[in-house]
Each structure stands twice: as structure tokens, then as C-alpha cells.
Length: 364
Image (cartoon, rainbow, N blue to C red; front, side, top):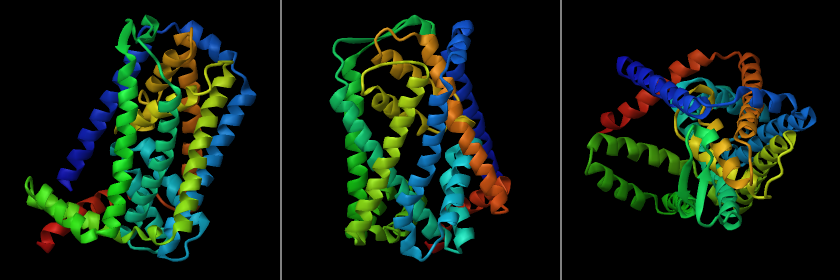
């Protein structure tokens, strides 16, 4: 466990450095009087609407996931909900983005299912989540067509930043193609499992036999969890709820803008969601501090004409709290409800991760 513990410590330190560094970069030259004034003038009704949308997204995620989980047998809505919220709490609290591991562990314990199957079903749910994200990216790519140079005002990061608009368009296009390639690879993995495993063994094995064996085991278990592709109806329903979930995220962002009286182009929230999704996908500080704030501010000053950076920072602070508070409140409630401990689950997650690393070598 020494190696795993050292790895977690390194991840924690790196995450804190990233989070604190981004906060320093964003807020070092901030006019806090203007930020405070913007927050004091916030429209509480829209903030409450944003909170309601966050809570609604908790349920649509489960409605999406249930069409995957039910392939393993009857699992109650309560168990899926608790496992998901505990996983979210872990992602917002612990380093290394281990929330998906803990989500799988919690579901396995509650529903008495094998961990490997739960992990595969959790991973597949993340893939379906990417389909909703892909739709948001497509809308942002089609609607947001800046020309010339994009200028980030000096009040944002302390100095004026210029970059070509083409960079944004190419980045969005690469993301869409990457997501399409990921989904396509998973379909091929299900249809031609042996072929994909041979390709993986050959490609990864050229670098490390041990890593190749581990990847082989993970892909094999994941392929076995792709039962959803046996039902076009279930697949369509899961994709539908993925789109609904991302629509709620966009409405949440719109509610946050309305709370501050910000009126930008209709596609502002789509660009904002894309930037936030990219930034929070990278492991960082607990609670995504910094990683959540920077993309919101950048999106607003990029897209909304004459956007005051101080007001944009106020939006980022309030929007972050609107997301964090429900995650912590519901996550802690689910821990008590199911009589679980986050520290205990974290230790089990480390042991399960070690098991995944050790299992292939024992087979070889």
C-alpha cells in the first residue's frame, strides 16, 4: 500500500498546486469591491432556480444509468442514486478523480454485484455522458463563429491576452472528433472484441507487457459490460436522458447569467459548458476550485460584448457554490443513509485499483 499512498499524496499535491495556481492567476488583480457589489445585487430567485436544476440533473443521470445497470439484474433506484451521489462527493473531495471507482464500489456493495461489472457499467455511463457533451460541442461549434482575434481584457488575468479565433474552432472540432472516435471504438470493442484485444495487446505490449496485460483485462471486463448495445430501445433512452441532463446544465448556466442580469448571445451557455467540461476533466484540486472558475470567466469575456471581468468572476463564484453545495449536502446524506464512510471507500478503492494492477500479472 506504500506505493499507492505515495501516489495519492503526489496527486493531492499536484491538484492543490493546480487549483491554487488557477485561483491566484484569476483573482490576483481582482477588484473585490466590484465583485462584492455584483454578488450583493444577485437575483435570489434565479439562484434558487439554478439549485433546482442541479437537483433535477441528479435524477436524470440515474434515469440514464438505469438502462445500463438493469442488464446486471434488478437494482433499486435508491441504490443507484446513493452510489452516484457518493461518487460525486468523492470527486469533489478526494484527489485523483477516484469518484467513478467509489461509485462502482458503492453500487457493488449496495446491490451485491461484482466490482468489475459495476466498474464497466460506470464507465459506460461516462461514455453516454460524452454523447450529451458532444451535442453541446456541436451546437457551440455551429453557433459560435468568431473572426479575427479574441481579446481577454487585462482585468481578467492581469495582462491583456490575444489569440486567433481559429484556435477555438479547431479545439472544438478536435473534441468532437475525439468523442466520435471514442464511441466508435467502444462499438467495435463490443462487436469485434477479440480483434480489439489483439490490437491492444500488440500496441500497448510494445511499450510494456505488464501494462498491456492490465489494459487487456480492463477492456475485456468493459466489453462484457456493454450489454446495452443489445437493445436499441435502451440505448436510445439512455442517450435521450444524456441529452436531457446536458440541457439542464445549459439551463443552469443560463439561470446563473440571469441572476446577474447578463444578456449575451443565446449560445453563450454552450461555449461556457464546453470550456468547463474540458477544464474539470483534468484531475485537480478538491471541489474543482480554479478549474471551475477560470473557464466561466474566459467564456463570458470571450462571447459577451463588453463583459465586465469583475461581474464574470462573481458569476463564477456563485455558479461554483450552486454546484458544490447540493453535491456535498446530498452526498453526505447518502453516506449516512447507506451507513458508509468516504475514508473507508477510499481505502477500498485503492485496494481495488491495486487488484486491477496485480491481476493481469498473476494471469500471465
